Length: 315
Image 1 (tube, one colour):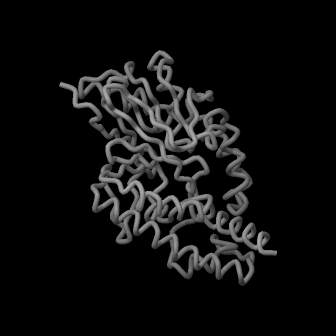
Image 2 (cartoon, one colour):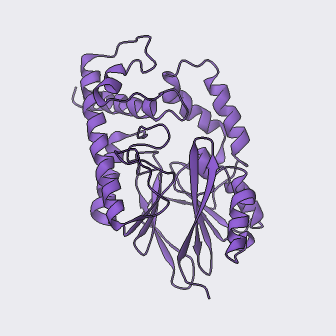
Image 3 (cartoon, helix red, strand yellow):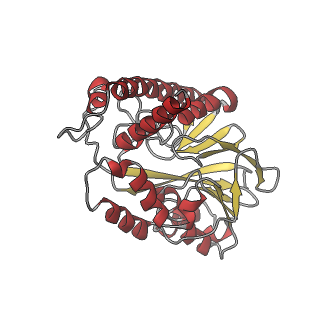
């Protein structure tokens, strides 16, 4: 017998990362995040068949944000539902669903400025072509504050939690929060938290902690605690509180180091961390900052942009 609102995690591998998607069992079934182009047919369909469900019956595709490993399978999944499912994404990240080129533009405007890879844009374009199953118009764009009915009294509330991307959202069902990559803790395989807007990221973490207060937390990848141990696919209330606290703590440490570095002035060096080598040194970050998706440079560019705007507003 169907248990309305029951959540079934779907885990699939991808390079150095594990990808997490979630099936919500309801009269109008939903899948939260879609992995890459191959994920729906190779991972989701068999996983649903194993619990007696059909991928053709999915009626909602809920995207937490626009990065390729979350929207890459959206078009393929939509096709498998006979194009009957509604694809939902925040309006700020919708361009990443509509256009592969938008992912290249995001790269060039941010981390690509520091990676010193003349083939970087071409590599991102190639990745977008390979893992995004198709460009498409969303069936519904959200801003936060909406409620999506999955039928039978199963309702999902939408919460804007920008920071990782401008259009990151949480979908909340009976205290369970699906946050994608909006709670980075100490990062995943790269060992560094990634966000484009540090002020928004900090505010969103506080909002999740103080307002949403999730009884269960579902992350987009196996993000790591301070001791390097990765969380599992589902966090209970205590683990959720810990993940939010540690996310805020490491952001504060990185933010202080970034502020000191930017106040002293950026200096180009031969270091792989240049021009943010003092930040890596101050927080003890020794991993390779050039491995894509390069959260080190994504986040430090976010601080640089934030402090530049903050200085201009006080000028």
